[in-house]
Each structure stands twice: as C-alpha cells, then as structure tokens.
Length: 189
Image 1 (cartoon, helix red, strand yellow):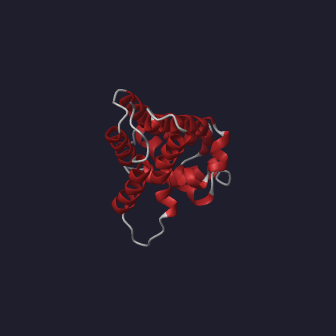
Image 2 (cartoon, rainbow, N blue to C red; image 1 turned 180 degrees about the vertical axis):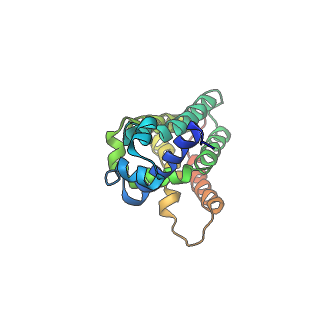
Image 3 (cartoon, rainbow, N blue to C red; image 1 turned 90 degrees about the vertical axis):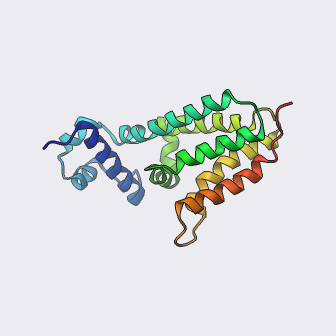
C-alpha cells in the first residue's frame, strides 16, 4: 500500500529535523536526507526543492500557532492574569508533539536561521508575542522582561541539564521563572 503524500512530507520533515539537529543544517545535504529515508533524491524533490523549503514547512506550523496566540492576546485585557494565560498557552504549544525537537533545531542552528526567511519570520512573531506580554507597560524594563519570559520557555530545552528531567518538570520550571518576570510588568491603567 502506498503512503499518502501528507505522510511522506511528514516523514521527510521528521528525518530532516533529526539530521539538522544531529549534524547541523549546513552539514546536512538533501542526498543524506533521501538516503536516510530510503528514497531517491527525485522523490524528495517532489515534496521539497531545498533544505530551506523543509525548514519553512515546519516553521510555518509554529508561526500559525504563534499568530493564534497573538490574536487571542490582543482581545484580552492587559493584565497579569492574561500574561500568565498567554505564556502558559505558549509553553503548552512549545512542549507539544514534535516542537521540542524543533526547539532543539532552532537552538543549534541559530546562525543559519538568521539568514533564512523562516528565521526572520520567527523573530518577528517572537517580538509581537513579547509586545503582547508587556502591553500596557511601555517601560524598557517591561519590554525586556517580556522577551526574557519567552526565553525562559525556550532556554529550558538547553539550559536545564538535569539528567532524567521530564518535559513536564522542565515546563513547570520554565513557567515558574516566567511568572517571576511577568509579575513585575505593570497592568494597563
């Protein structure tokens, strides 16, 4: 039985993400991705013309999730309760499914991402999300705390090195640190 086109794309994404994380984006070729999948390069090209397209494909899902969060936050009052709900929803999204692997990819390939359109889109969404976290408090300290709140969630993937820690424990720690930062951002008057 033939595998669906969607299933093939997902397999390509998973294998590419694995190789990009193991070896680095720049050191991974489309030929290696095809070989690991057990397909021809032509079969891979049918789905993705370049490594950039593969990265864009798994970044697009993350961007969509971030857009939904930004839209939701914009409809809420600029309060600590909203900020807590926003960072909790963000952490839930970042710890779901394959996203921990995507987070590791981002962390290990930051230089490359800066030059890709997908990386620039991620940076834009991160700044928009940070704006929502500090909305109502325009102080430079609030802006920095908002960015650091997001970084608390992200950095938990590479800064917390405790052996055997579960994803749930990692998320709990990240949200505790995030909450300390959020508590210092003033509510809108």
